[in-house]
Length: 318
Image 1: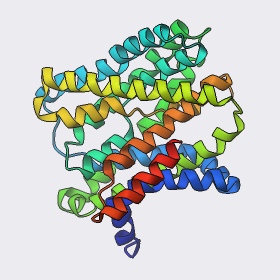
Image 2 (image 1 turned 120 degrees about the vertical axis):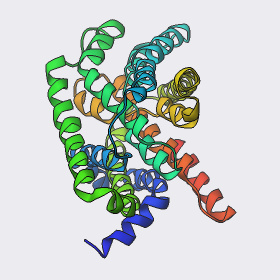
Image 3 (image 1 turned 90 degrees about the vertical axis):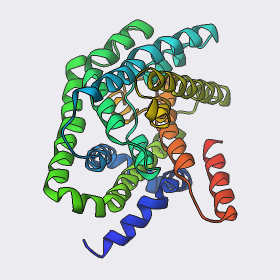
Image 4 (image 1 turned 30 degrees about the vertical axis):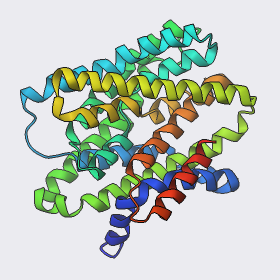
């Protein structure tokens, strides 16, 4: 394991650029993409475990909860309400309902990785993510029943998935952090971030496996991307508002937590249940979760490297 640490550390420093590249490779090489689809659930578990391991240790104080709960309410309630109004005003059909469901997802694990990379506080984003995840079995079926034709997934099934894919890795990450101690945790931040990036790579391959088989027209793809970009902008703006009210020192982190949502768990829970429009929105929502952290975390030293990175990200978005 020790010889791998420098490699993982390097991936942790610059590797947020890797998931979009793996997505393109999966589109070009379908057998490679199928490997990602097979490891989707383990990748989600590893990603969250590393996010918990990266969080700042110490006892959670009472003053930390007001901004966290405000950001969680913004993510779970206010953003979906605003997006629902915009989707209705734009005349979006079935895709609009699924867009609202994506907007109600927790802050993404990639957001915690970017926060760690940019030296922003990780723990507020992680606490918000966990609060939203454990509320998801109640909020997601309710939102689906309100904006879609019937409940897409039952609360009990989603609760079991949350326990498996969130509760278990959260405990694993917490045990890992406590077992390492603070000095060792600081030394291993970069390799842990690298493991999180590798998990994002697996998720990106699973998106590449599912996207080509939907077969919707280009207009549907453009509408879904337009809606997701709009939802991301609204989420970032409301995250800034939440920080301005309760945590002025966390403006950048809260904007990041509002802009990027963890769609992977809900997407895995709706596989085979969603119509093509819903699958498209969920997959593109997962893809945006990979692209935005890569764009924010891309910090090559040379202008050429930055230009090449932005070019690849643009190709991935197209």
